[in-house]
Image (cartoon, rainbow, N blue to C red; front, side):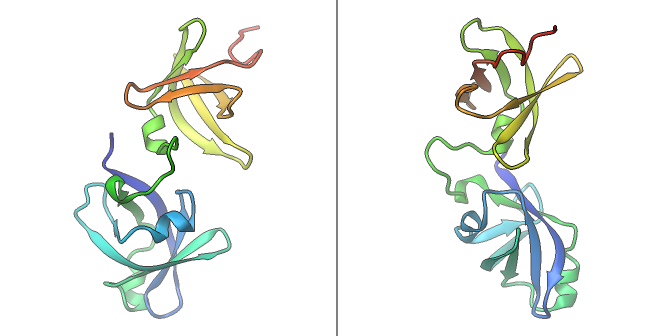
Length: 169
């Protein structure tokens, strides 16, 4: 499992005191507010102290202790931010998307393997898992009627497929 997880991308500066706008790839502003340090790399070597996080439409405005001018903030544009999974607070039964990607999708009744999750998307109502098998992609909704068990330790997602989901005809 990855220790450092992507939380979003800095897409612009905000005002003149070194704040930045973050396109959030995490659950939202409350998730960010619990973090004390974020990282500019996936190894946890380049840390920034998070002073504040507040919402602005579908973005977050972040202020870091180390960044105090618009010129310093400008250098962060386009950078992906990471958090240490040990610092992240998630609800019981919740999973990091990074842990679901790579899981095998298996029929809960027949044990038939349908492929591997290669991406997770969200267009509003629920997450959608992109399952690849031999170059063919199938999109499955991450809803309780379909997803019956997620075991990230064993990298298995057990499903009850909807009629027509994996049927070839």
